[in-house]
Image (cartoon, one colour):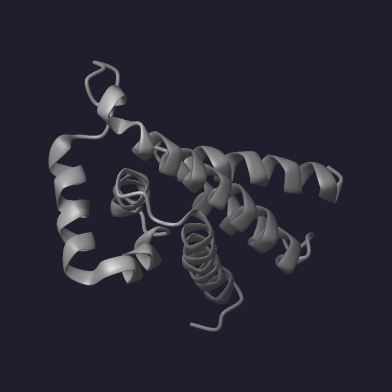
Length: 145
């Protein structure tokens, strides 16, 4: 498969996993790193870009959560939203650095939208968080840890 096709697939898996659907990106990214056929920095860029886009989707879902949370199909439980809101209240906008973390990251991105955090700040912090997460996966795969 040509590298561009792999990057496109990785991008869309990252978009999907950054939304409220369970993550698949880590496994795919590790497999692509292990294959050794692709440039790591391009894989990282595609994963971060897709993941940030998925986070922005969650951010906008958070802005309109009052409408969404009443729907039967809405998959985020109120207790997770409440927990994310408490973390935000306690730690402020630095909480956005948790946006790339599994499980709580989705609630943090939804909460950022609910609290109407500045979108530019959100994108910057989410990108940094995801870059650290995926960079760590690369470092593990490269044998640095």
